[in-house]
Length: 337
Ligand code: HEM
Image 1 (spheres, rainbow, N blue to C red):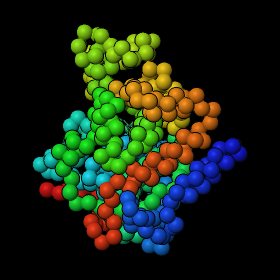
Image 2 (cartoon, protein in one colour; image 1 turned 90 degrees about the horizontal axis):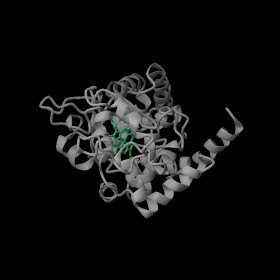
Image 3 (tube, rainbow, N blue to C red; image 1 turned 120 degrees about the vertical axis):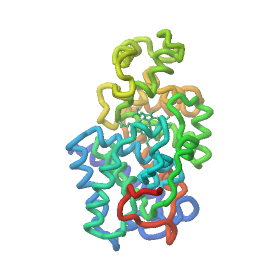
Image 4 (cartoon, rainbow, N blue to C red; image 1 turned 180 degrees about the horizontal axis):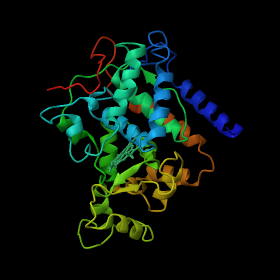
């Protein structure tokens, strides 16, 4: 590994560590009860085992890295980072049944696979909620993003409701005012919004998530969203042309590097090549626009990687269950009804 990359990674770890609680000590306020290295004594190899399994998972199917990162977003924004996205409902009323936002979620079997490994090593010790955040963190690292510490100590929630997902997850055609509201009601700032949206530097989206809004401007007459780069639109339209199964065709969200965690998301958005309305909307606010412009022009990923690690910590503290509350489930995808 190049010396430069090693130095950047060390800087990221140092910067994040400086804003985090001392290992083993509970944080005050949001995220109280979480700590870095929460499992150091009860399951010392927990983090190592998650990374090991994630390496195999991503090696077998590289599209699962981005999928697992997205799973964290859907877990945390709905009833907090409590693993409730994993719960199954026979009556199809759980978070993972929410349409259309959760329809294309993947990675459930992989979380279960990691959980099985941890159950072998340390039965009923590591929560599904913590596995989801560790797996997402490792997905970022395994796509050449930063490696940073995450707090652990979450316990699993027992409630999973479809309507919570419908209410709490921003749709891909959300405007900037709505996006900032979706984040602020969860105690996340405009900076968390613009930094975490950069997760779209990896992964793929189904045409159905953006074609109507971006390519046909909801008119169905081929009129494209005027904020979409005119040179970028024809290729997208070809991929998503009506008649093809729009919900099955997938498009790289960051064309050319869908598995490389880098700054090209910001270059795309700045050049009007953000895929979703919600990506492009980051140019409609003074602060988020300024950040996009700076990251689009940045020569190094250093600042972004530090910001990303800090924003992930913030998201990871969302409405967590700790202490004696909740449970540690043996099977993450247990049925709630
Ligand atoms: C700001 C509001 C956000 C909106 C409206 C949004 C919306 C979406 C949509 C519609 C997709 C495509 C799903 C599909 O068609 O399969 C997607 C993919 C993705 N999102 Fe977001 N997202 C947001 C924030 C986030 C955040 C905060 C993260 C992570 C921390 C994230 C990570 C991802 C990843 C990695 C993918 C690719 C998934 C894959 O390749 O399977 N998103 N997002």
